[in-house]
Image (cartoon, rainbow, N blue to C red; front, side):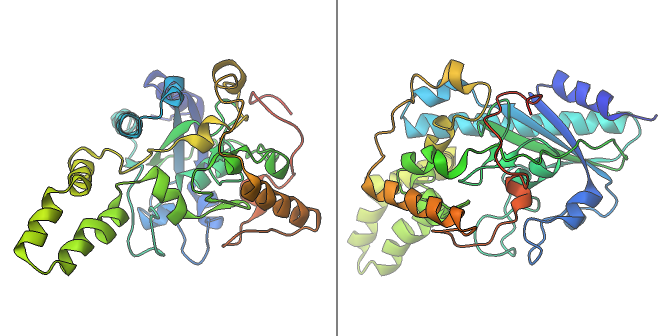
Length: 327
């Protein structure tokens, strides 16, 4: 059976996807996020020809709470739904004679660089597939929902018609800076992110906090009583809850997502609630001022790694887009 991109997209929407785009695996092979550490489909399978990228919008009610445990648990429900969509789409494709592989959304390859890097970077796959472009804080921004989406991907051995990339920069950039102003740990860089600082707010009970928290304390304990105090402490109980329930080990801070004005959903559902940014202070204002000055000279300020303009929208910013059809 010959399947078209339109048929595949229709099925993905039927399964619950809000956005669906297609990109050729060959295009992903030619344009890895970091050529020195290529996150490309051939690391999974050399037989796949197309990648189907899906996105599910985040419920707007998630941006009306500061309860980190509830936020983190809600995020995991979204991850499960995203992966179920990918799995069900894979079965549907295989029922029609194809071979398909659903990509796990938050897996990490510990041999790739240092930190959390997956076999594919779904943000960059989404950009290459025409779903959006990266923002100042390097989340993917979509015309429909800004950065408020969870992505999934399915590799398939069919040649499907790919979608065109978005060449315009969707992020307002240095003249906005709302993501930078709102970040509790000041982790937003000039088209980049300090993952360690971001993790302090987004993953308060993540693996790093466990290794350098209770485990480090246990290694340094000098008596059985000391060990018992560590095991019975509130901090250790919080880490144990994070391990068992995944609470506060991931996505416990949505600040940069909820204040971003990009996306057709922002004005109707989020603008009134998040118009002011309490975290904005002189330090953050000065940091953004440095970035603005650097941009005027064709440079970057406050950054760690280089970035290809391909991921930002090489045609530059041409105005706020709230729908996919706007130019």
